[in-house]
Length: 487
Ligand SMILES: [Zn+2]
View 1 (tube, protein in one colour):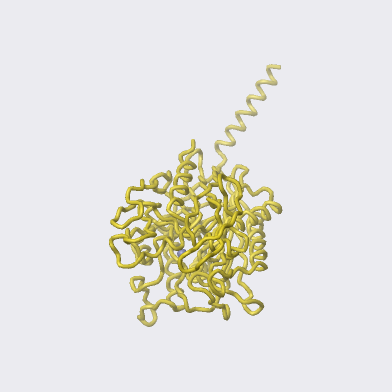
View 2 (cartoon, protein in one colour):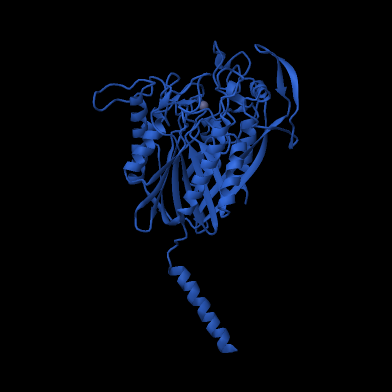
């Protein structure tokens, strides 16, 4: 009996010792990508992001969905980003259901959009004319399935992996973001997550940075992923493995366009103009180079051994009449149902809207969306975090710098909490347009839908027309902070 106990204790001690000396190698990683380019010869493809009726005439470069899967301590986390303007929560829920049906081991799947302004309309707003949907249902069904199967392929390809993290705030990163509205707060921070196999072979590199992919402008009719095409190509041709780009805080709005974003062609000395392939190529290559430079100069190897995955479904009030009219007209092709007190509310009323006359109008109160907060942990410590934002967030909500200006609609609105003030680690991945695209997420104190305009500007500032309303920022930020501060 005593011998039995003694040998049991000896075995336990040996096991404890083995666990202590064995390096923490719990992490697995896999990546996959697939082409999602629409067939512009088979169907009329309305291009998203600028005006109505911009019909694609060809393909310059393929658009992709790119997925990264990570597994530690029995949890599998997958994140996909696709080259498209945005996806509503409905499509994301369908994609998750399809992916989990094939790979039940997926604990959580994030689906984000790059906000590409040079590919097919996946939100319906850019059809042949206003209030006529640009959505092609067959393409959307195919796309949802394609994203799900690519997530599953990433999960299936997982193997033992090592993770290296890097961040940078090189001055060029801010100079690549033009900002068109006060306060001129940008989000220049670049975050990189690099994964290698046991053999040292590169598996994947995730790059998170913020800017509107719209370099080709409103006149281009060739499908392209815009600057993320060259960014990913640069990373993949410089030892990064499969590149996965997640856009960040791009509201406000941070853009590649404008004279102040000046990129010089090293061969000719020419400054690349807006709307040119040269500018998109130089832009993507520059960000790709900065990402690989950050990994080379500031690498931090981390032994990630577990995740904490928290997500919260929220109901954010919809206060944009334009979106309600669009919804009732079928622009979203049945997506974006409205809710009242947490229950689906499909009711429609007639309403007189200036400029449109009497139109049908969705009357439900809220739109349903989601925020996620994920910790990557090592021996009980948070080494990196991911926060998801269901739209285009103004950078001052992420970095701080909210402002009160004369002309604001809600001059006394309390400031929403700022994200990075609550995050706990050095590696703060913020995925914009993740799991939904609610449009601009604007601080309530800066919301300006009626004159006088902010700072007594002569004309209205751009932003509110593509925002769900002044209370979305509070709903999103407060939900995220609750998830972050949860014990
Ligand atoms: Zn945008």
